[in-house]
Length: 308
Image (cartoon, rainbow, N blue to C red; front, side, top):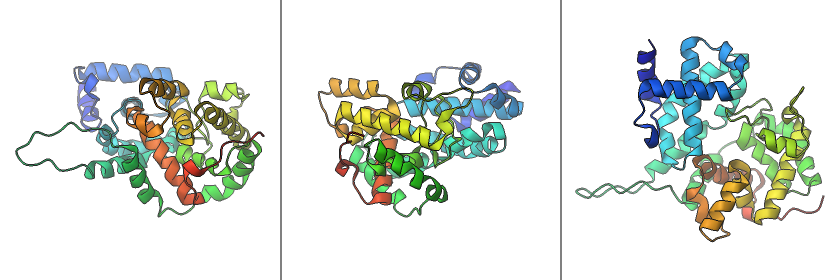
């Protein structure tokens, strides 16, 4: 049974190139070990055995792909994501993961559009290696995708609360729309990596800005989490002097951004964009397109933070 299940999972969730030499048993063991280290016990208990292995395997692989540097490879997980989402949404314990995944489903549509935009190979010539699309191409894809979208219903509840918090922290209020990209305004959203809340704050970041994780997780509280997110963005802008770089660091970690800037001897986001983790390459232009659509302002035109 385990072998058959492994074949089914491997068919809908192809592994990245570096794991192609692993057998099915190794892949399942790896996913189970990862799940035990990253998912709550309540989550694992809520799922039936077969569903649990499918969910473990998908979340493990999706996290690997998001942390990897090949954006176009994400297309391989689209079918699996659509099949896993109902499993996550069916149980109260797993719905926070469903909310996190739901906010990222359009990554797959964006990647499909990016693949469709690739130049066709001339007959008789070797297929060139697929490179990550440049930032400008991804930005245009996201602008087209986001432009028709109406305000989310939850935005009517949350944005009047979030914008004043960002303003009070000296950060442009338009950046409160990061909550739409991160969580679709669902305070319960939780990533497999442990980020929680409207702004998907990781535990170390939350603690750095004074949030308590126990007995109540303050990352799920609207104003408190917004203060922390705004402070973090203000600190990142102070470090990098650019909103695109600040948003990239918010998603991938400031250390990764800093190392790439040093490696390529630049202070420009576009120069390092294709070398960032796959999720960050999609996240930054999606935030930019969302701010442009919701507020009518370019990310690069937003003012620097002011002293709160």
